[in-house]
Image (cartoon, rainbow, N blue to C red; front, side, top):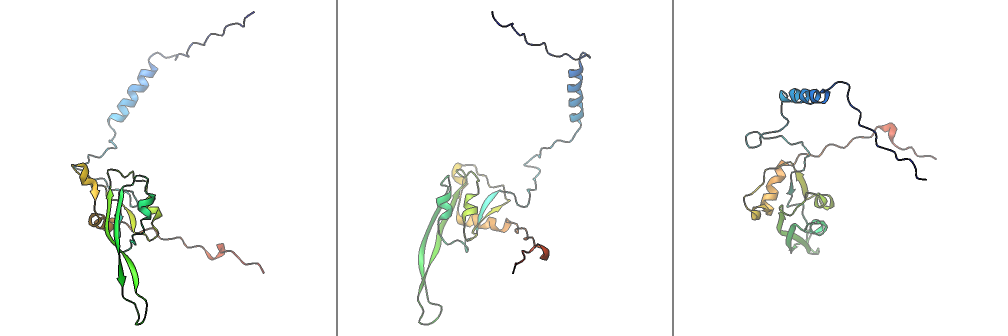
Length: 176
């Protein structure tokens, strides 16, 4: 013998006809007179948060051409070229040192996915997030930003937040 067939239950209907229509119209009326959350961009400029990710800024003096940022970039959108220069010894009779000099540092923002790996991996703090967000171009080639343009955005980078001080009672005590 076969098991008895179980039929699906009918949907529960409201006791008041048109209640759903009334709720929908009430929501429409309520939001009709509220202020929109959008910003009309060309005429109104939105103020970004202080630590917002906009564009990557470069500190040329801090860069040592180690190329860690270019190697770790998953999109290969960073182009770096440099050469070595001999520096005279600091003291007479000392050894001459070689120093890497940055010749080219370009970021192609048409390829960049703004993951921030390059900023995190830089051991000399040469790359920073700037809150600047207006850097579009009319052509695709306009999104390849050279070293001088990246250096200009360094002025817009906010100061990092101060480190929190630990209270003296929270310091670990040494056991004899």
